[in-house]
Length: 350
Image (cartoon, rainbow, N blue to C red; front, side, top):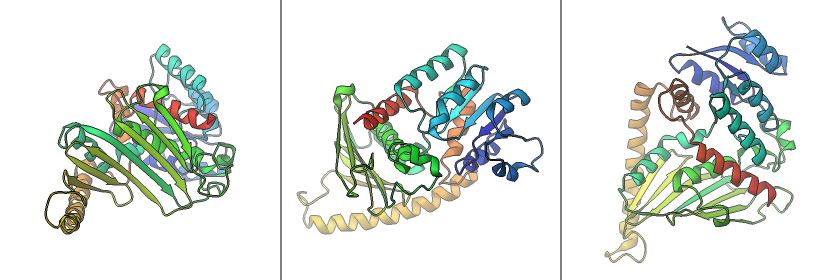
């Protein structure tokens, strides 16, 4: 049994709590938060001890695994406290703030023989995984490019997660900017090197002081796959990933949880008769199929996996728990965590 603790009881902690409960062989035994009022909802749960700081938790509770769900500024020190005691850590994104912190944390984990893994949960949306699987198996031929469009209809200067985000570069965006970054890395692969990465910016809010707004990040992989990642505020929400391959085009819409495909020849320059009519009919067909798949997927996956399609933390927790026990590689490859941190720090310094 993996005796597990959660440190930091903000909004994301409820997903970790549910994921731990839904993972066989894993038990929540302790929690900690500096705000005692947040401990109240756990106060009556049998077998769960409550604490106001990590050190007190580690002295009082025998734990194997700690989930760190605190503000970014605290991730490195809290994770190091656990690693130094030989305890595995699962850290919410962003992993850490700097390259030095990343290197220190991962080197310490390797030295102590424990796992230190960052949560890249949105890579586990089922439509995105389906699209990646179809691309990887060669259904559409060689992959040429990936575009990630991340648009949020919010003002990042108004905190949603808590006032602590105002201390981050980009406010609310400082906490969420890594989502489109790791999605791009998971979809396209990693940059050939740092010189293959370019960063541009378009001012969409009329305030150049909002970091990460209007970011256009691009890179090329060793396999010559071009990846572009765009992030904007003040526009209608849209989270979309598009794959352009030799024999087709695949689009994943995170909001509608759908996958749409177009084979080669789609578009105004296709040699087919009535190309736009055929394209429109194909779009309708794709919509019907996407809806049918969504219904089937929801029913089937709820029966098989027991977690909601919008719950992207449970698959992360289950994979990491298995990896701790020696089964599988875990939910987030080290190289992906490394490149996400590299690109995040490049944006911070741009």
